[in-house]
Image (cartoon, rainbow, N blue to C red; front, side):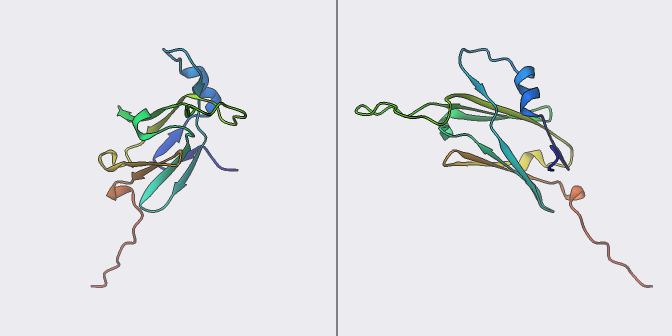
Length: 136
């Protein structure tokens, strides 16, 4: 079973986040599901945020807490009206606590087809390396 902790990143369970976060505006507050991957160089976070466009997405980093917030709205087409909808509209929000193992200056984000990809590079001292043995 996957853990909700990895080296350098701690996530909160969606249920905990919903009780810890209060919306200041009316509407639905959604917790986007995430997948987290780690390699020797970085941690990658994928967050599903259907309906969110780059202009409706903010990513804040404050005191070691990375918060993603995006507003999803159904597209409005003049001749179209909703018949069936599988995803909710509202505000997506999720927070992650970063450790000192993450190089916060080099974090990258891309949003494509409703999937946010965050690349959190590790600082050099946190990367695994092999020590050369000298024979003198």
